[in-house]
Structures are given as C-alpha cells and as structure tokens.
Length: 319
Image 1 (tube, rainbow, N blue to C red):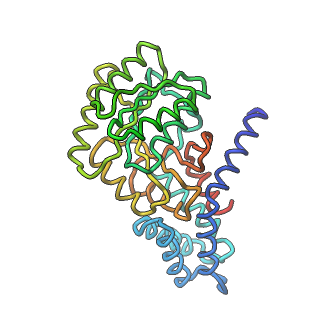
Image 2 (tube, rainbow, N blue to C red):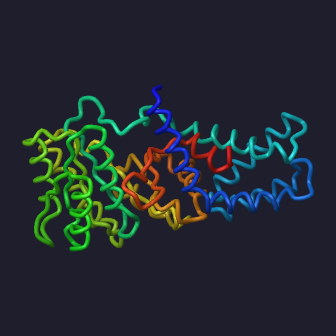
Image 3 (cartoon, rainbow, N blue to C red):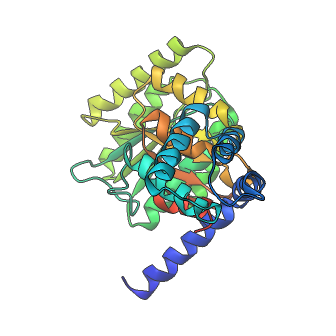
C-alpha cells in the first residue's frame, strides 16, 4: 500500500469516527452507567446492557442475540471483568455481523466485470437523502475514472429533478430528464439508451419516493425495471434502498416495506453524523440480511463511505 493509500485510509477512519461521535457518546455514557461500581459482567450488568442497546436503536431481536453471545462468552471464559467489556462487545458484534455479511469487493467504487453500463436503481421515501446519495455516488464513481450518467425518473416532484440537476453539476456528470409528470419508465428507458449510445460505464436512476401505496410502488418499479432490461439485459444490476439513520426504528419499517415491494439487494444508511441512533445500522445488518453498502457521514460530496462492518463496530466502541 502506497503513501497516498495510507493517508486516504486514515482520512476515511477520521471521517467515520467523527460521523459516529454522537452515537458513541450516547452508547458509551449508557454503558458506563451500566457497569459503574461493578467489577464483573454479572446478570445485572447484562440486564442493563440489554436496555442500553434497545434504547440505542439496535432493535430488540438483535439486542437479545448480542446479550446471548456475551452470556456464552462469560460462561466460557469463567471470569470477564467490566474493563474487558468493550473489547468483548466489539468482537462478538463483528462476528455476529460476519454471519450475514462479507465486505468482499467493497474496497473501492468499482464496476463489476461484465456489466457495462452498470445500472443502479435507487429507491427510498422522500427526505431520506436519496438524491444526495445519488450525487455522492456519481462523484465517487467519476473520481474512480468511470463515465457516469444520471436519470431523473422521480418525475412527480419538481424539487427532485432540480436537486438531481444540481448534484449532476457538482459531480460533473450528465442528467437525463423530462417534463414534470412524465412517465418515470420513459425517463429510465431514455437514460439507459443514452448511456449505451455514449459508452457510459455507470448509470444511476432516481425513482419517486412514495410508499403510501405498496402495490402502486411495486407496479411502477417493476415497469421501470422491465423497460431498462430491454436495453441492457439484466438491468438494473443493483437496487439500492436509501434509509435515514436518524429515524432509528422507523428505518426498519421502511426497509421491510420496500423489500416487500421490490428486489432490494443493497442498502445505504444516511445522516449518521447528525444522530445518536447509529446503533440502528447494527440491527439492520443483522435483521434484514441485505448488505449495507454505503453510509452517509456528512453533507460533503466526499462524505459517503463504503460500509465496512468491522471498521464501523470498532469505531463505535472506540477501538
């Protein structure tokens, strides 16, 4: 690894640590209170830890799995001091997440072999940071040397098209759009067709952020998928669901509804820098069985990171 790579990795680690500050402060303060005046990880400590994780938006089911794992370690090791607790929690949570998720192939913003153009359809409700995430993705892919095109298929809100236009300018990539109220599938078709004609490497399609009618959403997204696959067989190659990390447990419900409505195979969790609810990432990774591929840690165009579970958990526990 060269000097630039080392510096870049250190910068990413600093961004991650800073982005999780509020969550770390909340979790650490609760853990400190749970173990205050105690020397070993007793049943009382485990009961208090359970409350810590549940109130940190990790989720009930995932919390119970963590507590079970800690109990097993305490039995196995016979004696575990409270001083060792952070390391123990970090190790067990990393191992738990490894059972569902690998970080293979997530090192850089790269296009999978044999997929050109690589088509990503982005879904999520309004306000979660969907369009912002698309802009940041476009910037990262362009920075990696790829030719990128965006499609403004959220034709129901003028603000969505305008915002995507702004991000396209910031990232220096073209945006395909039509008039407000146009058929979303037609925009997607035009975007993918233009991308093929212009030899683009990456196509990112924005979609309407509505979830009040699951059947309507499913029909619309299915139509978009079908028209794109006529141009590029197998497109979209990935369906990325964007969730707002600051909403805590509400993000779980959004994830469940979108997974029921379309074939989501990647997640992006945004706004982690402005919330103490970052623990929701652990719960979503554990419960949804869908890889969290990206996390948003700030407003800047560079503040979108590829999610690495071990680094995330280590940062959360101050390691």
